[in-house]
Length: 267
Image (cartoon, rainbow, N blue to C red):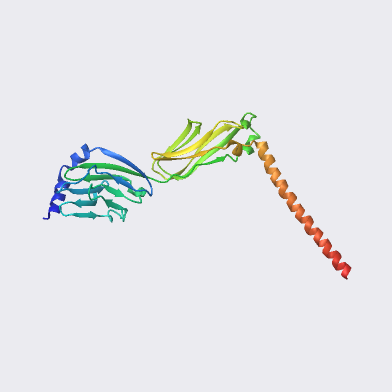
């Protein structure tokens, strides 16, 4: 049996239950597409060190360094090629780097060697989309049957699509007004807000995960016109279009009359 296999057998069999129960798990986060390094904590390895990196519940071997045999081996085709061309080992320290991360790289990583044992819980977060603030389009159509006080409010909606492990929140200045969270399903989220017309307060909608956030600020003067202002704006636009069409028709009619007169005169 080679020295490499001898040390591998020892490390695999040596107190696996104690390893799982006593080693502190370090949580690591990264945004999808970025690189992340799982630090061994070593400055250099011993002459007889054998570094083993394992992934997942089944503790699949994905990389190893044998100092004695002066070799580095990466098994990036297991368990399902999710690590293909993405694993790098530091020969001096034994640290593992995952490049161009994907959400499929989320999971448990274990480091075993003669001198150190570590566990890492890696979470890869998808990139955050920017929240979109819109106005409730049904507000004016239903306000005619509501009280005059309800007409003083503007109903808004903040929305994001295809998100997971995030929290969506409304803020008034720096004060949290409301929030909604989603765990591991990729879904769309919407969060309502009602403000008063012509209000001077500052509002913002924020989506965040543990490592990043995206913010959209509310422009009340742009979204929160009163229903009468919406009607005037709408009707004013329609009136302008009608006038333009009528002007074009008059121009065409005038040209037709001129052509008819010219033909009559020449005849």
